[in-house]
Length: 249
Ligand SMILES: NC(=O)c1ccc[n+]([C@@H]2O[C@H](COP(=O)([O-])OP(=O)(O)OC[C@H]3O[C@@H](n4cnc5c(N)ncnc54)[C@H](O)[C@@H]3O)[C@@H](O)[C@H]2O)c1
Image (cartoon, rainbow, N blue to C red):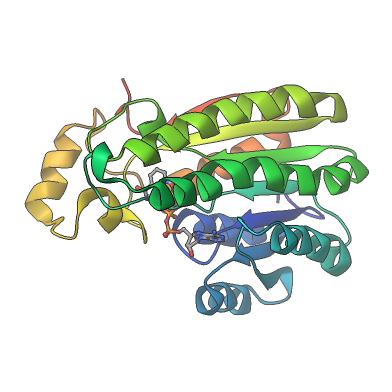
């Protein structure tokens, strides 16, 4: 029960990595704010988790909404110990010259700007708790660039750099900031990364390029989230853990 008495705010927790991380926080004694843009998804997860969870409809690119989600942590559960910047979006697979300015700006607003703004909104509550952790879901795509995902991959490289920048500035308050670089996993975003025709043959071809021979799972990522958010990682900050089966090597 590593999170007894602790409160986490997880963005994009209505699906995929964020949903499984929220379930795991609650299993380990914590309480969670589900800060999710998709109301049906967020409400479903919160209602399944019961009194240990609270859904706040949040688009992380809208400052007022992100601030309100942070306020909900303190007003509902009395404190905030962990912020998981998990919400992320990509663009359709396409050559860089076909990615529009609007697509580029949306990807950066969700994947990069919201990490900085959300961390700023959470800072007073994390300080008041005597310290805490910010965990950013980045990507192996931020390290190992592949074609047709230029804006997404560069946004994740920026998220990795943001993790280090915030780690330095939040360290004086005993707030650790870490990142996670997953490889491909089956979530709501998979079709965006690989195209809709991701059949068994393509899955096997992808897995043959992963030294450990398989895709990641949401549980693999949640394991890293919980480790980095816990006191077990008390001397770790500014680090991004690859949860990629060696894909980035
Ligand atoms: N699935 C993968 O293969 C993979 C690999 C590496 C990194 N990632 C990253 O993992 C994170 C989680 O994605 P996932 O794979 O679980 O996908 P997902 O689509 O299953 O979950 C993402 C959730 O974020 C929510 N969301 C999107 N924009 C939002 C916004 N502006 N405000 C609030 N919520 C918003 C969505 O509604 C969704 O519920 C993302 O940052 C993604 O880039 C995913």
